[in-house]
Image (cartoon, rainbow, N blue to C red; front, side, top):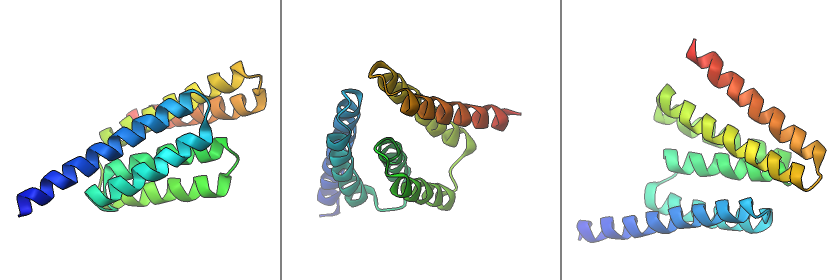
Length: 144
């Protein structure tokens, strides 16, 4: 029966991953609210599949944090970022993996900035470019 449970967990994990990718697609199209909706569903599925203390849950929290910041929910954005940091710390995540997540976050912020710039939202674009730059500087600092 345990094997059956594993299959179910795999299916839930796939659903979580799919919802995460759908959120990314919606975000690229500039549909932030729809993206957030999918990320919330992804988190639910991922927590069911992996539990709260998992790198995938932390990654989704970081992604949701970026979208929340973009839609002017700075407080909730910070909560997600801190939650992700606590999970990563407790898991004892490796520095290399940490760098990969940071690179992904920097890239995402840069892409969001580019989209904002194309729409003429120059202040938001600058905020995202600056945040991306800060993360990139942190990564460079970690290498020495």
